Image (cartoon, rainbow, N blue to C red):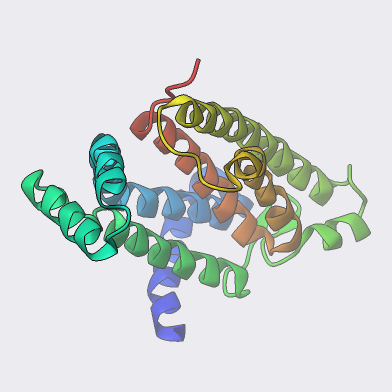
Length: 234
């Protein structure tokens, strides 16, 4: 793992040297953001592939529902019929799985790098290796370092609210379709959108370098999902 994270650490140093004339003491922080954007852009084709897979599975959902009604008492026959349907429509039942795994791998490696203390530097007065608790102990919420976290919390709250609203609309729209509702679906519809606010807790407890990565990646992800998965609700 150390050798892999070192592979990502070198571009951070090179990017920091490149942007140093513009960002000066915050060059490493800017490099963290730029590297995150570059990695997200590199895996964007995988996100598009995952979106195509999801749309394909959604298109077949009504037909699969009919097969469940027809073969619900014969699991083996149902499985065979569903596989035949996917083959006939040239849709892989696992489409989107591999792109998602590749994205998770890249994101995990970057998070491991930024949270492991290997990236040093500052964002204004806040050390990239420090945490919110450190900022609170050094000037409080509105101290020089504390204000950096206030700005991050504002961005995360805005992105989380945007994601919350879109997720609720999509879940409500899905619930209004003529599809069988699973047990507990109502509770999930209420709870799932709230997960977008978990990022606030993450930013508060991880090192600032990892927090910058999380905020940048989360913001990119929200915009990307808005483009790839247009809301169907009103």
